[in-house]
Image (cartoon, rainbow, N blue to C red; front, side, top):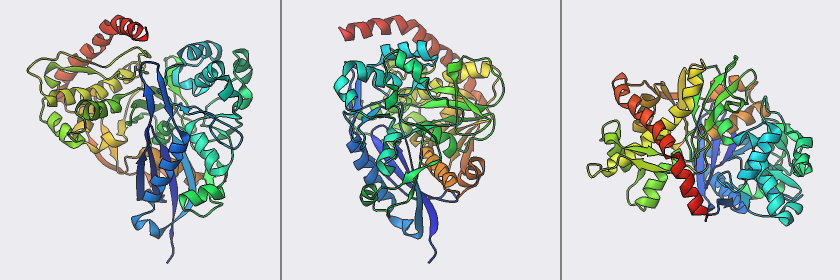
Length: 484
């Protein structure tokens, strides 16, 4: 029997590893996932992860992906993408010198501000650099033992292939190493750059044994899972937009012309002739998990909670939730911001709280999109990614709040599909990224916004924005009190 070619695509998310066996036509031939612990201390701002736990979770997820119909396929390449910006300080063999410093870690705020002034970059565009500078200043021994500063997916690439490389996407400029040296950052620990989608090397024997694969398979350089989702959601043309879903959430729209927005709104993308406008949030997806697991102790499942929200009218009875449980990135960039329910009364039920959380994720998208639309950018439709895309209720809320047509890919694990697309092009299975996306991404359904909801959501969105403005001084004061 002739086996069909397929790619093993790996995605290291926050607290969860995913593996997909993706056929050349985009079919999901096998899928697995595995959890790993995340060490978070809200009082100190620490958020760390164990790269060895990453590897165990990646291997477990991959083994799950090979079960079932995967026997009809032959793995022809591997590509890993992942969370960011998360820093791994590793020695020459790839062994971490300390736990990875996760993207949720807030201890490097002063280093980020310093690098912003030196490099002219802001927020997530700084990548792992603030955390690396913090490490050198606060833990010189761990820094001194490190040969490389790597992102999560770069460390996986090293573990898979033995090659330490910093992967860059189209249009991404490497940092000015002389400027980094001026603030005391050892730039020689940043590995040589390689374009995402290029073959890093061959699968090492040790990694092959752990994954149950033949050695010498080509390993293709990955990138951040949010950028990988751009590929896996099939974004090609100006006006194509995305809700990245996941733990943090994010919104971006492709564009190609001039636009009057600050530089921090603009991002490189893995496609020639395009750039993205938008930003990442911090905890829009995590907010529902927090409500389900931390408040309700897991006694009610996600589907049941969303059903209760669906039975509640748009606007949640005048209840507003600010989804700032981990501070907030775009568009307010305020690490002191905190989650808030406002307007709570005895008339509100659990369903109202859940609906307010769902609506907050949509308000957060609209908040990021608002200045982009004001600058003259148009959105054709917004692709929904990740777990939230499984809920028609949540998808409709996002369409109604934003006013965008929503499109749901058949395979919602778009970061995994994006990794497969990168690998397929990298080994020549597909000629280029646009043709790979057109053959490997299929839209399952589309939802249009309901005009009747605008009279509810427009004033509620205005209240959502005003609520943060009103509470900002209080958030700052509470952060100061918590610090002391």
